[in-house]
Length: 336
Image (cartoon, one colour):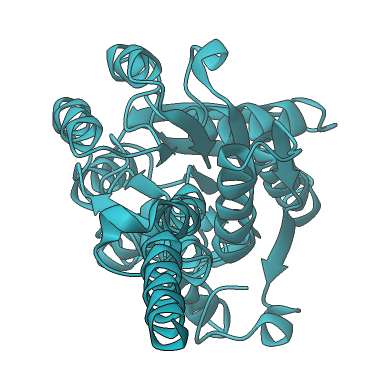
């Protein structure tokens, strides 16, 4: 009887061990470990939720300003663990619309957008909204601002105004003025508006004798400036919508052998600052902005937007005049 009882107790122990083994969690195949898998899936989802794909569509990626702007945005976006997809429309509104639709199909969550043409961009804005892509409008505004989730740029009217004020100080007797503009870019429109408002307040009059649409392109600006100087060799000043156009105007002035023409730009680019260091250069000044600050602010805004954090819907960075007297403060090897 004792042996039989011992045998029976041993069998009961084996059965208990088997049952306990069968009930043990987190062993065997993934299907056996549902709790563990769920926690892993939650961790993966959390990481993915903080990772976004942004698009960048500038006006022309041969322009140093937009190269610097894109680089500043990319630095912040990639540091945050997200991705930036850049496409270059090369000043073509048609190409910009096509490329934006390509980025939508590639699955972007948000876009940093500088419109080539502030009116022609509307169908692309409509497509972005339809795809629920956040729109961070940068540098130059679109016409239909209701589409935009946030705008970050410079005070462009003030940029033009301080150029006009500087011209009045240099030429208190007034004079003839030519303008190189680009009506499809609202940032340039506002700069020219600010400039004209300033010179309109001068005691002695300034006459705008010629204004030319350059489409924001160097070659068109160069040819336009050549024609203006042939027609009006006595022109006092040329106001340019950005620094790239100002370099074109300076080239035309040099080719014409004129020494007294005053040229203004807007941006504060390294090329213009190098010209300002020359004692005999025709560049009087540039209303400077910071594509680095604008880009970083835009990138932080875009990330906050997609994280459903608070953000400002409209931010204007300050502008200031750089001329021969203060150019050394800002350096000539890069953007401020």
